[in-house]
Image (tube, rainbow, N blue to C red; front, side):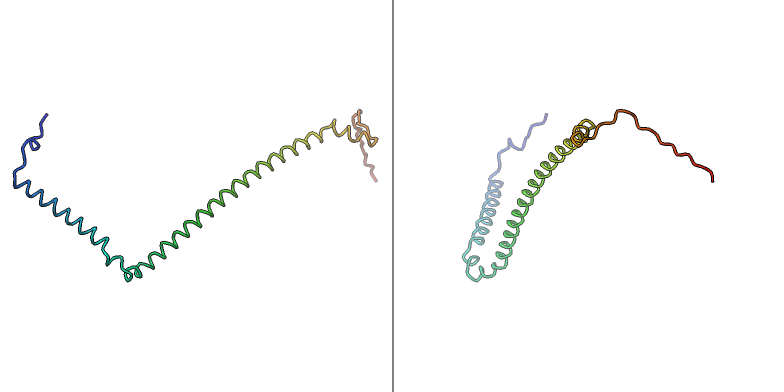
Length: 135
């Protein structure tokens, strides 16, 4: 396995000076960037007036975002409530369907019509045959 020979060699004074200059240039560039970013010219009242349309646009987007969030939450609540109503109606349907099935059984119908004086037929029905006569 080869070893890294570059790290073993110390840097020459010229290389160190070049690296130091490069680091100082980058530090100066960074310093000048932050100075220009936070300069008083950027935050003057004239510059602020120029930013008003952007600030208004961002405010409008914030209001739209908040309104959309409220609308979504309201919709979720309505969906949840409607789901509960559907479940409740389904339970009512099953209960009423079971009651109807019980009430339409032959024995239940016989009990209810017995109070009216009707009796359940025990003999099978008779077939009526009509003979056609030739004229």
